[in-house]
Length: 482
Image (cartoon, rainbow, N blue to C red; front, side, top):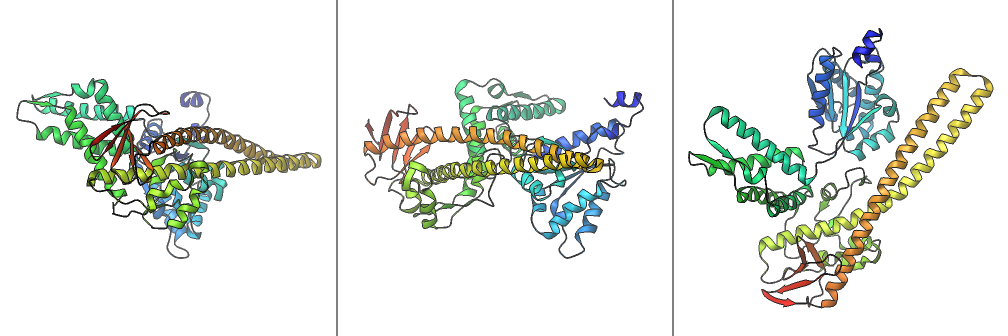
């Protein structure tokens, strides 16, 4: 494309984008992508350097009147002829000084000194980007290119671990004659693969999960265990080494989220109207807002909104005590799963609210588009070319935004239907478990890996069928069949 433009005597700068929005959670290689874009633009002669200047919104915002403008100007100057990567842009949606910073960026990139002379990438979560755009509509036209960065699947995580270990193997082969056996990971058996996928699924739901960044940390842990077993001849990776590394990380991450107590009481709070669907959906992002507060009344009030799940939703958070004989590990895991169960309910409730808000947003965009169309007709009648051009741009912008929001609405609706179906199955399981009458305290049953455990901790049910469970209930190590 660049060569064609140059053969035609056209400047490639006028056809290629220089301003980008990167949407996605931590560790999805947004910074790496910025480096690759910088390298491409450098290779075709549109940038003087492939360097990426990494900064955050904090570096732009001042602490007193008159400081923000110069700070933002200095950051833009540093990025000239390079790639300016601005992370944590959600901070630019809060406060007067933050708004001043984003206004400064918008105004500056239209001036000759900065126009098409640097690449600017704004990076943050989907919801944060949307909130920023709603406050500063000018961003839509100034940053037309938006790239979505989604987390990898559990299977992709396994492949990435293998790739990183293969790189370590390559380094070892270059520097020594030691053999490096990775067969268990390169060609895993079905059971081992299942174990790894389950653990990745657990990790990805923890609040602090950082995707590919944490994959690097996990790989280092696995490699460290491998080195500990080395006796001078051959490095052999075993399934146990891999699973132990997984379990260590799961335990460490889980301990950051939950501090088990004898009489736990937890509530779930959400920060300003979290955009759950855009934020990858995700229980892991909602879990970051879980705090131990002891606000029982607020929990009970919110649970009334959760359809037929009723007040039992919060029973384990208000009246449940730890049963005798339950180990610390079992109780800690149970506390994690209680929080996740509550988070799923909160997610369902928030998703319903978000769907209603989205309907209102689409209706408003439709009305604004109709208004712009009427103004366009008026301008045509008056033969005002400037007004016609301006109103036509407004109409097209509203139409494109409305279509984008409608696509998002469809995605939101599919997510809501999937959650509703999952809740229906969960309610069927809860009803079946309750009718068995195994737990004399009538505690709620908490879903765990492979089955259910009562909120007190002493009863465990192994589930063989999702909708009509064929359960084996263990009560204080005595097995009772149902």
